[in-house]
Length: 184
Length: 207
Ligand code: HEM
Ligand code: HEM
Image 1: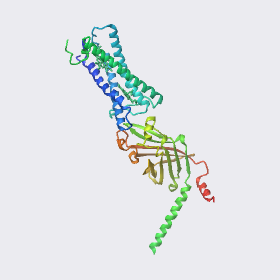
Image 2: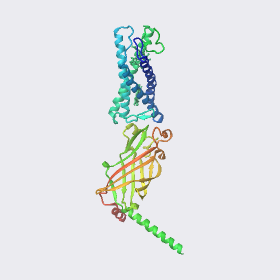
Image 3: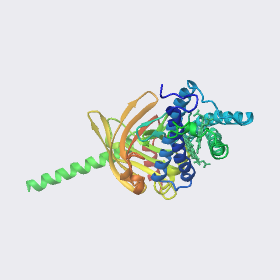
């Protein structure tokens, strides 16, 4: 029960998913942009494997996070204009959607390209489709656009959180921060 | 005296055997490949995942008779640009200098220098040449004769590093496994045209 969210703060499970996945995204997004231009060779394949392993981890976490979240209550939002509340909630929904679309499109692209998919050298995941050059192009496009939209939304989302904290001086950011939980 | 005579007797016998072998080499029946029912593939492993490469274009000269192994031979030239690993990206990678270096070594060749019999079937002693590296390999195969022709099946495991395939950085076994299994299935029909056994002397007789 201590794991659950309360009327004023997000529970530790929601917070762990929230900040843990942020860390993984901050790792794998730069890798994603960096890796494509490397010359073909084992270092490139290994760094792709790392990108994909973290990406698959994020996909699994997104699924568990969503399931957990569906059983959670939402802390009462700080007072704010109605449009802001709608915008915030729409952003959260879209972020969830992208947390699935981005890794799934990566997996699809990988499958359509006929690349192997090994999770941290431990086990291999099946291809979602047979090699398919046309689908490969589409999936890559979705992956790249999805990531760009994800980044834009996260930036807007984070800026909004900071605006609530530093300008509105409300409890929005604190509701997601572990250390400041006990503060009134 | 005795020794010398015996020795020359052996020499003559050997010479006769060689001649007979040479003569029968011409006599062993020739077969043509039915490409639509044949495949020359290899199974490699990349980052824990098996993949199959199909060599789509090759030229096989096959002579075989179970009772005339000395006159039998397998001689195959493989077009390496025709490798299809079900991933255009990987196919491109495979053609580069680190791997098959197809620009410089467009073909690989496989030639038996002898075929011997073994309890489990015929075994070719073959020279396999890839990327300028020649390796002598045993090539056990199954030969099944049918009414219209025959089938030849073989599986041989090779070490890609023996042929300089993916040396240097690529030698890492966890990225691309060293062991590669070559799987050959040939459906053969008796050569349709006049057998070479008749053609050759004729050609030789032409002044
Ligand atoms: C949430 C998870 C993921 C994020 C945030 C992410 C992010 C990225 C980014 C930023 C890029 C570079 C895009 C560009 O160049 O415009 C990229 C490329 C790529 N991603 Fe992901 N990715 C994720 C998951 C995955 C997964 C699960 C796979 C495969 C199973 C994957 C496979 C790839 C591949 C193969 C590329 C290279 C595209 C190319 O060759 O240019 N990604 N990813
Ligand atoms: C610097 C980065 C980030 C900051 C400062 C931040 C801040 C916050 C804050 C303060 C909340 C609580 C909002 C409320 O109670 O209405 C929140 C919730 C949320 N954030 Fe973030 N966030 C960041 C990154 C991310 C990222 C990368 C994602 C996902 C891709 C994300 C997804 C969510 C979601 C879905 C919620 C709703 C609660 C939940 O279901 O987990 N956030 N964030």
